[in-house]
Image 1 (cartoon, rainbow, N blue to C red):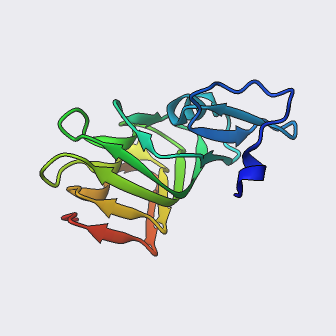
Image 2 (image 1 turned 180 degrees about the vertical axis):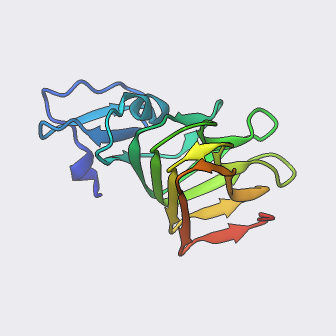
Length: 168
């Protein structure tokens, strides 16, 4: 998006420290932190969240069950220190029916050694689908960790992505 596309409408409430936006379904957008916007997603229709700037995490972003979330990174960076948290995005254990698609995000673990995950799907999930396209995974133990599937199926797709100083 060019800068003109990011200009809020006069009737939109926009916090001063917003990191991202998502469509509000009425022709406008809801603005906020990446964590807050993901928390506002309801239902299984895909909701796309667009990053407006680089994001530094102090806690993992939790993606709950029965959500279908797309992240358009616009080549922005999501960084975190693995000494404080082990992942950027987390799909909780026993989650069901979750889809997370991440495009064009540069994930960076800022600690001195390669550790942590950009996306972590915890154990015993059901029908969890994760896709990453055009991402860079830097200084991590793994780009995406996918725990075992309890029932049903799940999928993992990584395309057009780069791994730098990342073990798996």
